[in-house]
Amino acid sequence: MPTLAVYPGSFDPLTNGHVDIITRGARIFDRIIVAILINAEKAPLFSMDERLKITREVFKDFPNVEVDTFDGLLVDYVERRRAHVIVRGLRAVSDFEYEFQLANMNRKLAPEVETVFMMTGEDYFYVSSNLVREVASLGGDVTPFVSEAVLARITDRVAERAG
Ligand code: PNS
Image (cartoon, rainbow, N blue to C red):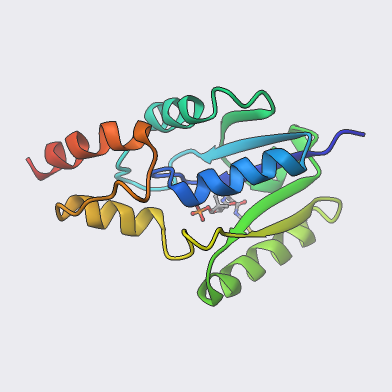
């Protein structure tokens, strides 16, 4: 049976840390669905359409990477898609407690769905969407942390927000 994995998140914005996990996940699983959570934040940097577009652009040459959106419970989405695995990236120890809770709650809700953790690449263990947003909004250079597709849009977006 082909292994279908779901990699859920807010991806606001997609960082090189996410790209690293998706790229490695695409080598392990037959298919990986990047599932973007709808309405995760009240005032997102990028709209859902933009996040979809950016992620699809970055993975356009990966035939086994699909990009989709979801709302409601993650495990309901995973079951609806007939997937078996949830993929999460682990950066530093600080991620562990939340991820441990999430994985255990999801296992209680859907025991047949397995959460698989992948260690974030060593170049990205300190990179998060929150920090990228903050650095960009304060005029810092986020080139090392995001793909061209994000970079092309983030400067304008931050400027628009600053008014
Ligand atoms: O990018 P994030 O914020 O780390 O992703 C968190 C995400 C989307 C995985 C989590 O918030 C989630 O699964 N939300 C969907 C609602 C849900 O299922 N909540 C219960 C999880 S125990």
